[in-house]
Length: 453
Image (cartoon, rainbow, N blue to C red; front, side, top):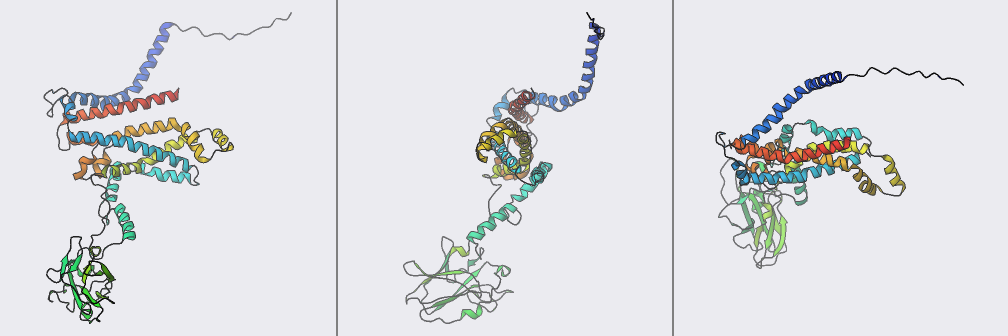
């Protein structure tokens, strides 16, 4: 029988309860010292302002008289505040939904792009621009003047390419010289014109510098004789550069108005012929029957140029500002969703492809369900962010429509410091905004802790 010697490692001496207590207290003290600066900053920058705002909301504008819940009652009776609540609700529903959808689509498409990193960098770059700078950029982009606002310049260019534009938007007939203005903006001769005669139609209101290129003097064409089946005439600018000349008569220095549409209208009001003036303003109708006609210059010759869309008007100002917000935050949503997409199990996607699923089926039935936690976090984070939006609304919305675009954050500032000088009501608005943000923050924190477990 062989004896086996088992060597045992000596156990450390047990620690007494007082020693354990001292070590625990020491560890807690060290931890508290490390956390203390953060706690002080948190208390000074978050806790104290919240507590002060809650207390201030129960006092009047001067801060000396306790009014109880009067500020909260007034808040929901004020039409401007109700409009701010409505606009905030629009922001909360529209902006996070569009951003999450765009981020998801772009994250999926970027995976199939060769230069994916460069594309992500390009989309994420607006995040490096401050809201102040972005607001100024889009305030200029949305300018109604097509010579300044790039969006209206594009809209006007497309509109004019398909519908054209009038040549003489400022022209008007000289009063008492043979032309009568109609309600639709067109002009018609005051008396009938018989074939075999000519007529001169004078206009004013056109600067010589604004005449079309190639316009020639009208004088040589003014005295032309017409055959018995023809009506001829001249449309001219009844203005002599440098002064002089006779009103209602074509003078030697006066220019014709080219590209002016002229119609011949019979006694029943039907248009029998249409022509366009030449470089010297002359026009001619041939092959006419032997009865009198009225000459008409349609309103299309004088319509005002298309000025584009009023992006910052009362109707479109909120969608326009949301568009600027999308430009800034789309890259953020795409990067976060792209990170979640990179962590998806590839074997599930490959198995679906082997089973015959197309890309749309894979996206709808596999990718989106697996990304649901990430999409929820992105959506809730954006909801919290849009509730606090202030810079873009304040900078982009012009003064006259500021009230139409206001949200809770801007209304809080306007009531407190922007002219209202009622910090009691402003504090009540701040408390309302806090109460709306806290549930979304709590939801995000709970999901984060659940994912950590």
